[in-house]
Length: 483
Length: 95
Image (tube, each protein chain N blue to C red):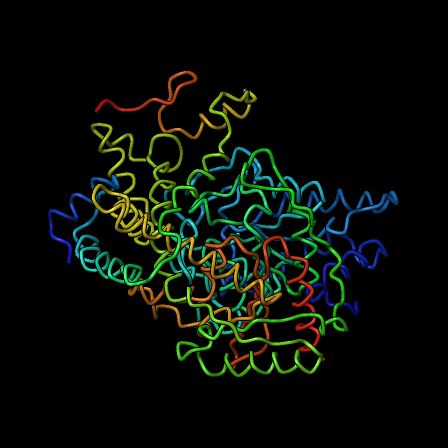
């Protein structure tokens, strides 16, 4: 066969299915074979749902045979981060405490994908409860970067990013609380989009920091990301923070190459300081020059809140983590030492002591400290005030520009083991991404080149609910880069 | 460095038993992280007074606290995950 089934875009795969060039079963089989070959080294997946996936693929094939019209995503193999509930499958969130947990319901995003006829091939590896920037905090062993196996894939959605980059699925869902989609997308050279807070229902996403968490998409290209995002977006009565905005996500990304003269792109000075590695700076500058040639206006802006975004994040996030993770108590579900315990306190202390990993414990304790009597005003209240200032800073900037372009990360993928002993060094990988979660804005990371073997990512931030716009600019950059 | 008393107080608040090695690490790491986030205190912030509005906005989002009916199948699959149960209740140990 002349077409390589693992190099298709979603649209090409769809066309191939309806033209009967290959069946949905063959398409899924191709990806399972690829996983068998590559995932021994990469370890992107925690579990595979092969039997269910192939049965679902055969259903799609029947519909095609009966000449029924099928959805764009029908028969498309996608991977799901393991903190999103898929009914009757193991859902561990990378934690020992949920080692044998079977999801009793589907997350809203999963229900929506199933309605589209998507083939769910497996659950991907992640830092425990989405806390980390390298997947090294997974209780089931780290994921390796497909571009260089000695490097991390980023995190916490490292398994999803590596699965897409390793062509072991046609796209994946991740979750992003401080950069957990965009940072691994950048490290693995794929597209990653974190939508506006409220764009996608969080029902069935295991909560980490509820005011910041958002489900999003990792894909091989901007068009694929738009297609998957449009399928999962929308208000949901099971998540009161989800909304139905005026502008729906357009699954077909408009080509705006010839309309760039109407647009102003902001470059925040603070994002291009000495903390940024030189090769990343150079390649972003090259992209910006190309955009100028196409007629875009560039404006240097001040993002003075950048210096306190990370400190603010590392107060608000652990505070919410300490509350959200109190549900893993050995009483209701998950691993428990109930049988060995003498009394109730022992069930709590020993279950959590034994089955939670270091980073989870560290953040729970940090949160407990920050919220404890005498420290609340000093930390949490101060962080809430900083949050207002950060929001104001972005609101002012978006009066002057239509988009912001920043690096996604200060460096390319680091080596496995390099930062695991130093939590603060690990936290700094989220320098350019956390502001977006604190403000609820949408942002996308795009691959724009390499430093040696390692991919470099560029981040576009847009106004609230302007995912269509950042996808459009993303597509322009992608096209300029491919030409 | 956190004192032995401080780290013990924190493990109690967090309901987590730590190994000696974890205790040793956290005594050092938690103050390092706290010193990093304390950068905030040096920042000249606007909106000093307005922060409780933010919390109010979240509270407005909460649904009424009332029982929503659930299928017996889902109830059973939830209860099946509990380490101890008695009928339709999750059982706990006495304290």
